[in-house]
Length: 350
Image: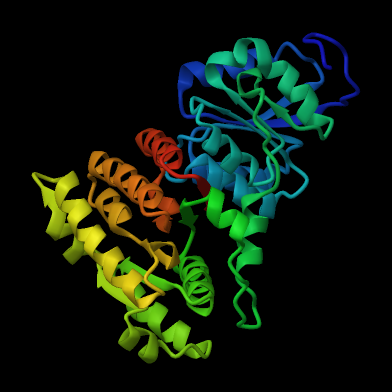
């Protein structure tokens, strides 16, 4: 265990600090300045600038916030891993949601602490991370943060066009999943894999997405040899427009629980009839809540995610949501990001 103030074998480690709050930026720099072996080579307040500076400076350590202008910290970390692969990353964020921590560490970062704990944990975390060890704040004791989100995501879609089978243990524990995608290619790859594996397993699939995504998914599934025409005729592939479905249960810009349960209940019942008459053989995926978020209605998006979570549990079905990662760029976006993660049983991104 590292003791604060103890000497460690660090020789002039170069540090890039990325923080958009001026008071907290000063605090971090002041704390790091107590260690003569730590050289602050850059102070950045913007996500895109952070990636550029990391590529230019190749620092040993990046101390990184999540809620940043122009590009959120998780996406910054992912890009820094590409442009400066030897840089170690320590997240210092206000977010304390365990799913957010897992997502942050999933980028390949070595450490995560919460800002309110930084006074007692920052220097210890820096020491550990620079040694190549993982450091997670004490408040997260009891959590086992392992693996990387990117590795999980990349394994789910195979380049040769085959579909990895759905894993029963994952289905049982991860009923309501969210995937944050950096571009449409990952969204389409990920959802094509999810839908294709489900259809091949004899399940019925309800897709609620934007028209461009629905059209692209249909073409991709056909290109992979799936008889989508037959699946549609059998009622095992139900593709619906997200905006049209939202209009059926939104009241005063918020999802009405009764109307939502009626609409989704009817959809699930119809799909179950086509899939051995069992709701457990139904999966749903799409972009209803993400569409609300894109419209600026964050409260409605979070409420809808909780309603979907209730549906996943009560009907024993698997639900997958997809959000564009780039839309979570500000401090507010980061706060909502944590709430959205908390409404799901599993979080993935790429």
